[in-house]
Amino acid sequence: MSQCSGHLYIPYEIIEILPKELGYLITKFDEKQKQPIEEIRLRSGRAPSAVIGNCDIIMPYSPVNQTTVMPNILTGIIERATRFSIHSFSENISRGFITLPKGHRIGICGTGIMKDNSVSSVRNFSSISIRIAREIKGASKMVIPELLDGERFKNTLIISPPGAGKTTFLRDIVRTISNSPKYKIAVADERCEIAAMENGMPGFDIGQRCDIVDGCRKSFAIMMLMRSMSPDIIAMDEITESEDIDALSDAANCGIGLIATAHARDVDDLLKRPVYKSLMAREIFEKIVCISLNGGIREYKTTDVKKE
Amino acid sequence: MKLIGIIMTAGGFSYIGFIKSRKLRMRIRALSAAISALEIMENEISYSKKTVPEILCLLSNEAEDIIRPIFESVLNCIDRSDEYTFSEKWKVCVKDIAPHCFLSKDDIYILLKLSTIIGRYDSEEQVKSISLIVRMLSENMRCAEGEYASKSRIYRALSIAAGLAAVIVAV
Image (cartoon, chains in turn yellow, orange):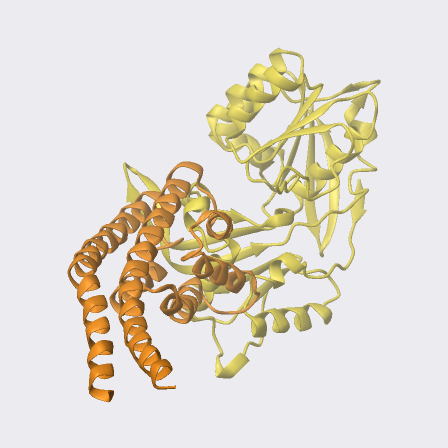
């Protein structure tokens, strides 16, 4: 078991898209906190709040006689986040999020626009959650030896509740492994959060031997990587669909090592969910790393997956 | 001295006529350039899904000189980090720059409608709305061409005649 904590500032990429007064308020609020802000939550008609540790703390907001966030503020933020181009982000918006440069993610709520039996877009934004991506080098340092069997990397699933740091942890594993001459690692970065690619350049340090396919579904990205880059290991974030599991299974059958993340409090919780139950039934993963937050401090617990 | 006065009077009146005629011709050129630029915009939105700043950057380089300042101005404006929405920025820039591009009030009014279209919807809806704007501008261009055909010669002829008349009266 290992721990990691530390205070970090609000990144420029986020301040840039916020209205001036709100950006100033959040910066000032952040300076007074002992722990870093993990998420900023803005809801129409209510005061902004910040998620720190496990708590959603309301901020005292009163710029220019306003006590609450108004819908036009949310629209302005989305406009700036999409660089005034909702059409360029329509696929992501229809899935409820936008990824900013450096991997920060904006979750969106509003009125869904249905087309052909699926959500094609969202209008009348009612609330947004800005999740701050952090690069914490060394976050996986204590855990990595447990994931190796000699020189072979054990297929690993990282689980935690939302916001506990799965992506940060995964990114650090990718960086560490990719700096080793023994492995070629590839990343299927569907949400552009792991490497935060911008114009073909990674926004985070993801090491020397890492190839990335981003912005497309994991199942497609895995196949593309397998065909084109002959990776030793493929990493991906948040398995949610049965197509992802099929692609994982194909990769595992080709002898490629895998690292993935999933939402679950612990192994028991994981096994209760139908998608993950079928994933575990395929016996792809050998190790599970469970991340938990205790009083704002992250704890990493590794477990061997028992094969039936 | 008298001869110089006569030449200047006749030249002045003729110049006014030619300016009027040139304005009509330049409006047609500006409308044609605006239509071409919007067609590029439509293609970039529907096929490559480029962002608005990328499209404006392309138009700042590739649109015809007569209309280019509008796109350059909007691009500079959206590069600035402030709290104005794209719609507000587009309106300010078009109102500020378009009158210097030989466009009429009606043409500018149509271009202002783009403020609530560009970047606001999914690509399909945007392309539909831009196509409508293109059709409206094309209609204006047809009217402008008709106006040029009918009024251009009259302006020139009248101005020369007015210049000569002024000279005769003065002599």
